Length: 354
Image (cartoon, rainbow, N blue to C red; front, top):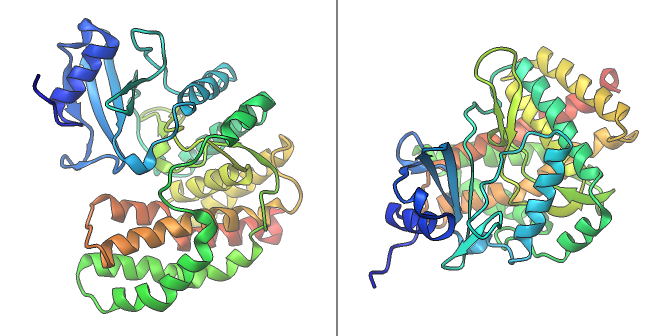
């Protein structure tokens, strides 16, 4: 029997036919990419699947370091169903032929969801307000999960990619070794690494406000950046879908709230007055819903910055130490910008915002 190379079109078609059935064997497949060449994700294979029932997205987790134990898949499906029931727009899953929400093929979890056309959250203050409203809906839904979900999820290990508890060591390495190395280079990769590492150095004092442990541990999405909110392309901005629940975990619930504020800040595209108004509205709405307590605004960006700092440093190591020059790294530097988060922290903690 011919062995199919994992992640290829032939492999994807085989997985679809094996687990979703013969009707999918003739589907049209197209890889989802950045700029027509680089994969959209550096950990997963993503394909647009066009069949008689419409467009769908096939996702296979291809990075062994990002795999979760088998117990994670039914938990994830349970969380998605709960959020959907609370009115949060999450993509509809197409069950495999055996009725499960996902299939495991060659040891890799694969899933098929309805395709949702839309744009990322970077189009101005109205988009930012839509992100805030839906993000808070999601956080409210997660807070209402049955307690046994958190208990079960806490027992499921996280991907072994980056350990955020090592952020002090990552910051020290960034300041003492990586930044000087980046500044010695002149190509665009070294310049990009140098810029983000300088931003880390400038924003580092904010990390002193990070709480010693989770203020209120809960199930969190954990990755609510701008690419995981799909918004309508026409008419009043509204969130069509919240994507990628693969980082579900039990952690400080302020992490999701910090992501929401940061994504809203990014969507404002450098308009400080708009960002001030949007973040002020975020604080008022979150407090009204009981999602933020007095003083939590001081903790939001420190929690998010400590969470993301090791990721930034690991990407810088890919560039400077390993010579792994992946196009997605530049986009990740923008998504995780310490300078933007420092600006957001100042707006969130300003007397006028309280």
